[in-house]
Length: 135
Image (tube, rainbow, N blue to C red; front, side):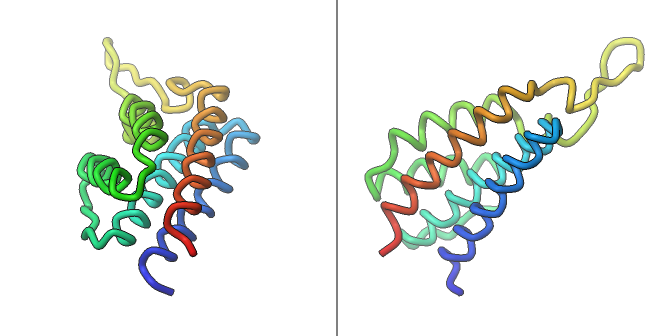
């Protein structure tokens, strides 16, 4: 399996995992897997256009945006990238220290409806990416 197809497979499985997690009220994990799927779609597009994909999360999003222009899918990618950037992937993974030495859990910072919406949007980007870069 080549790099592009490997990234597409990871994205597909991550989208499926995200949907299942959202249905089980694990919205923080669902959002994380949607984020991971989005990054993986970026890896597929970058591989398709010959760009070495970064290991930095912010750089990945920027590279995905640049590569998406080259294959004519920038609009859809850009819209979802704004949502992805507002989430902050670490918000899905780690407790946040609050005043008084208390902590807020990731599950309390992401609504289930938002996780489902993110999954739906990333699934839409996946369809656009697949049409643009697979033969």
